[in-house]
Image (cartoon, rainbow, N blue to C red; front, side, top):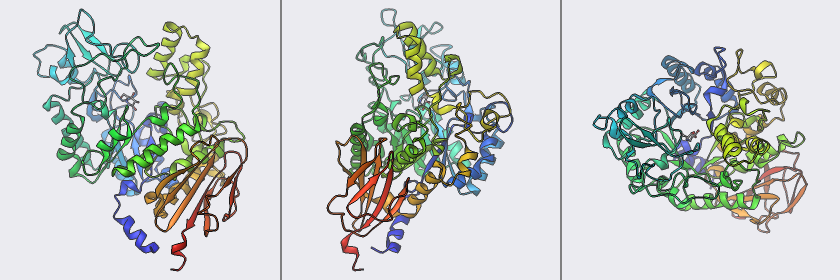
Length: 578
Ligand code: NOJ
């Protein structure tokens, strides 16, 4: 196939399959008004930085009015901007300027729950016969207790008693985040209306928060009690419920299908099989989902907050299962190492040892960006940012981190040192520290007092430094993004894993009828030598990208230094005659 033909075929592919998404946590990105909190004007000021990186789409974490119990995931008004972040005029300006610069914007859609300060909930809890009561999920006490043993994601029961109505309401997250009742058609209509409000402004899509949880098992069964847990597994019967696909198909029919947009669902507790139901293009639900399988590889007996390290063979198994599974079922992968809920990837999957940090960050970027799917970069990942270590729990802000600390020290008696050790590895605040723009005070993020301390290593790891150094992680990410835009095989090539059991390097191929992309990354601090598969040895090839000085082409072996990564593009025999 000629390059022109390949490019013509690429034109048929929807834009979101060829895009790279950059996730912005607005509170932490850039503070333009000096109040210590990032804001929309701050994002506007930094758009050129994102253009230089080369990304296509910006995903903003929630920017709606919110009491901020869970940093914006508790919404009290879906039609207004959170005053800490700016105004609707700021948002309109941001959207227009981003579009002018060729950047699309997708917003977070949080409709599994609202804030308890939302007018709907304030009404709902007043009386059983209030028109809004049925907007939420209420159950009578059973033997004067909560109706089942579900635990909330942030600790404690998922049910809170409301004396006024003598019923419990469900909240799979904090008690200030009551779950909406999707069984109520009126609720669904309200949601579709608010979605249209934003889409009619011209936004380019939605990231849908915990969308796999919107339909609950009507029997509300107890969940199995897991070791060390007071409550049953908190999503038991709540994930991928009986009507979830019906709801999403309805949402697609009513709203999504009327706009040229992208959708990505956050779908906890979703297997490949389940995910294909959400994303099969013939089913008309979502474009892609975020699964959590690789995020669970270092869970220990207390769940996420553990000191366990992942095993490379397990990571390969997970990625491979999703690469192959989604391709087989007309689905599409979203590719991510991190987001605002996760630790920094270089610490978690690579190393933050100074000597190797940059190589490890580039290697991880290579392994992810050369897979099939839409890659997501969380702010600061393009600098190779590491986890932060603050001495005191008081320096942390996140509701999950604080509740785990309390649980570990007060209920489980695991000791403060152990609790802090797991927080250093897993706290969501590792990702949420302010973006380090420079080595000046407060990392150049704010002239005020930052709402969360910057990572103490900001004098070394910051944007100004990265832009000065031609060998920085930033410029490597820029190249990775460019490869996706210029090499069709990165979008279309079929994935094949090599050496599944190897615990040191991750090597895979991307194949089309004419070409093979050979991608390899060393996950260790020791040099590695890799044999090329025999069918590639001797074929014409060229180096596409590497994080070390690699030969321009390879014949039999590839030598990788510590945390080295290299990608070679091979031309198959059949194409040589053309
Ligand atoms: C998932 C979001 O990513 C997380 O930050 C939030 O706490 C929960 N959903 C609840 O909305």
